[in-house]
Length: 494
Image (tube, rainbow, N blue to C red):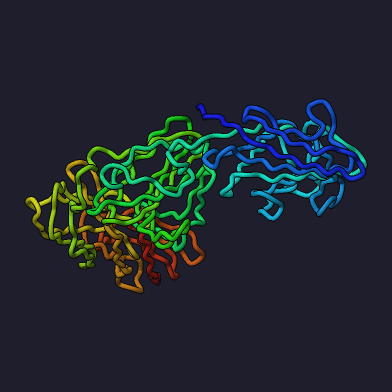
């Protein structure tokens, strides 16, 4: 991966208590280092009180510090300001010490290996810091006591320039490209990102069966605001990694209301994740603002492109559903839906779940409609389950695109009765399982009064059994069919 490296300006003002020291101003390029006052060959000073302001040359460049040498005196107690340090390097995300404190650090990894006494204040080799404020600057202070001075620190100072125009990699505005915002052909570099945070979005929620999580888990985040064209329509985005970025998460939120740098409203329209995720597909309303989030496990570049089939859809929905219901009919679930119009519709997949989370495909219904006409459809399923069962339908276009409809549910209460007769008996009994199908068998288990399993067999409805050898007592008859368990008590008197 390559970046355009620019010049940064480092302004240093050093006030050393009881030590005569001249203020220093340094100008370095992004290929040099940020080093303590002792330089590469000497220790920092006792009673030192130094300050640095490190800024990029222009606002379009993003600065990063990576520490390659750390030897700052740690304490064996609370230390200075409860940092667990005797000497403290403090980094502020802004222009002065009124800015948010990134952290106050010490650590002797390049010396004895001693760490800060208080957790969270140890600076280590390889630690990287990027400003998140609008100026792109770090304000840095260093204070030491008069007991011991060590070899200090070295940090590489680098800068990168966003790959998109006008420094918008940090997620403020994505320019409306050809096709009025419904067409994308951009490169995102998540190693060159300053701004962008999920906290920018309020009223965040999830919708649709394919977007059932409400967070972005990977560390390198980019956010882009874009506006759809005047007709809206279906948009399909394909993400292709240029570098090895590991896991990629891509989501679209919207529509949202834009107020300066804050966004309100919106839900997840679609989301994909993986090292080579599938395309993201959503229906953009006309003249609406949406947020595209691209999040990667590792720093690097990815391409976002609109698939060719997106262009020219112009907001016409392939299928318009005007009715979509489910009804229980005895032991069956009947899903019915009616379309008012269909364009390029191939048909519908039917999905079922027993827990509302893991769905599996159970059927297919062909489209019966001519161009731009509607039709009525239904699908009947016998789940052979008790309790709540969940269903939804997925509409598929002839070009391979798909759309999930809402999840419906139906409750199959446990109305299968198990009987044994005569009851009481001398052991010659008939058991009815409640299963209506004559070719479907159930597992039969019989337990005595102390829970010992006396019989484990198969039985169909209305099976006769000889239990005359059993001792007198109360026995529990258990019928297991699929995931349903029904019990019944039978008395034997010999």
